[in-house]
Length: 556
Image 1 (cartoon, helix red, strand yellow):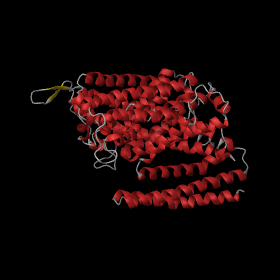
Image 2 (cartoon, one colour):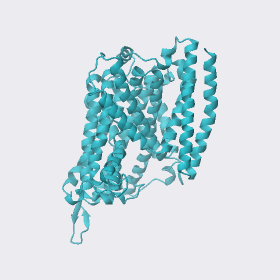
Image 3 (cartoon, helix red, strand yellow):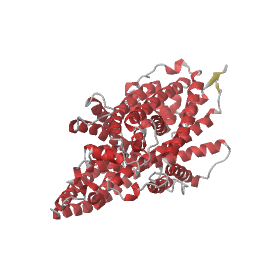
Image 4 (cartoon, one colour):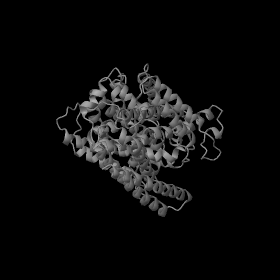
């Protein structure tokens, strides 16, 4: 039965070694590190740090970053073993195909769309707002109807979001080495600005702002104290999303067995150090209470507050900012940071679908390589349109948490995959081995699931609905067109239909439970709309999955 058939590591390595028809190998270890930094440093560094410090951890946000980094490191070590062992485009999708079979691989491949394509659209929406801030500082601005989606008051289309997605997509089509060059330039520029913030702010740190390091708990869980530090760790965990995107470029790396672990763990380590230093300066120059006073919709407020406090007090105790011009450069850093995040997310998405297409699970258009540029140009164009439409017409806050839950789910499957492969193929060559297996993978699973558990019910509802749509596609196309299913007998195909349909029915029941639970806990209008959506999904899929269950029974 092809549903749980695995791709052999030998066949995967053979695919990656096809240098004539495959993707062009151009990336070095340093390029991978830059790629990872480009994906990680973005909104997390410039906004989440202040928000979590002001509401949860105070100066203890530095400890929160260490805790979150340790959680990411567990998953990163597992990614590094897989990436050095199976240097093929596709990231967690490819690893799952080699360890847990086609069905699980399809689920994780479809799930990665949430991390990459939907994540790119979300970041593009934020990029649009920051561009307008920069234009405002120069005395001009775009009209609101070109900055908002139709679902937001006074909006028609988010035009700058479309612009940045199109621009980054065209860079990707040109070539991976060119994309890496653009990313390297962006990374150097934004790291320079981050360094300026740290160096300039260091001399204005006031020791009283850093004491106590962990403020006393206010009586509520997560509101300062150690519970606040751990709550903040869960919040800033999402500032690290992106380091796993390095693994999607394995097939375009010159020496992946050596470069992949360096790229994944190196970028994670560098960003962790920067996050801690940035948090130290931010909470040192301004009292953490000030970061909770800004407008929640203004993600620049924490950084702006810190810069406004980089100065000397006069006799009246009023601080005159020494470097008011720095705010404009911080906005530029955010724009650059978001641009590189979008670039890497689009790169990751096209490479995942490239691998799925090569396996027959998706149409061949996603694996067509441009004869000159040696990139999946048609796939890049298709995602350019898809992500642009998403960014132009869907509010970013609708899908922001979906990106996080999709990423965490991918981390869990990779951690499971390492343990499975250690049992099933203990003697397979590994250029890098995850230490202390199964302790490290288990800790990664526990950490990531704990993060998922903190997300609201509506995010889980959207995740389940998204997985159901993925099963729809797999039932209607993937099962019959899979390269590994070409020689399957009718009875085997029928069994695949039945098992997939049963899984879909289970998801439908889960969707019903989540939707009703969410409705009972929150009776606002938006909740009713989500309930109606869930009920329509359940009714349609009761018929759809029932049809394939019957069809599978007839193929016995």
